[in-house]
Image (cartoon, rainbow, N blue to C red; front, side, top):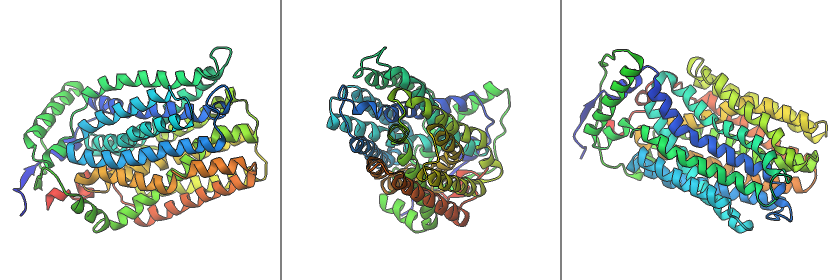
Length: 475
């Protein structure tokens, strides 16, 4: 028996808001986690060769690849568990819980004493960051006005690379044994990042629960109160008077939506969209997890770059990865999702093929290899971020976080969790052609994703989330 219906204009009131300081605080309070994640993941990548030293954890290249896989596996499990919790219990509760778990994992990583302890602490860190992907992306997309949603989502996900840039700058300093002992510098990198992350807990108090989530979960009075407070804040900050929109939406609120209903919707009515989201996630996950968890090893093994200088090569890659979404993000809202997503995936794949062949032929140096990656990731970064944007906005509100979680988890399990271990072993062979073959596989996945987006992509630019996918509570 359907629940009583409710007429609401809350989605339209949120989408008609002008950009304000409130929206900026939402972006900073939620998105800054990616900066911290980029910081410590890059430190792990930069410290890879140093952690093989007899003075530190004495890890092999295969060990380092396996540790990266532990982190990714944790993220997969965290995304699924907390994705379900986000849709069931709300965005706000979960993005606090996942941040605490993430910070705990980072701080414990600083105390690791061998391979297994380090791998376990990275697993905990992954659990937190996986949950963050689901809770944060859904909250941002539901609070940001429709005309800004694409660029904001891409920039927030791309802000990971701001942290990566800081990590790349910090790594040479942390690895300088004239300043820190070999077994101390890398620990400080994790410890400092974890302590700084505690400040995010304070920033998040400015972020309200999603009114869209509240109104579909029998909490309409709370939703109205939150929206009125947001409108009051925006009017004060912008000096604009906000007219009430004429559009209204009929929903049938429920306290919970069963997993059976959610999954049957994703593989039934929205089967093609599910194929689209999964394809984009697999392609970007394989590329990023294969390259960035092993880039330090490539520099050390093939170009003989000293450990303390690895960070200088990662820095331009991080800058390029952030500049891509920053400079190209608005095109996803103007030119459109389908055109830009297919174009960025296809161009990334073509550039990667050229780079892989040059690497296999030993025609690259550490500098030219870095320049090639810079060009690739300037384009690939907005493509990768658009995978999360796609999973977030093309499914019904009631399954948004779980959809992000499922496709992140499946994409990472299929394309990301095995990539670091495989590439770690390919690097240990010492054969540039074997590593190059791995890059060609990544390129093929990118080109396949471009083709699927061109065929199945959804033109979601400028549209309300409810018009892209009808809420389950509307029926």
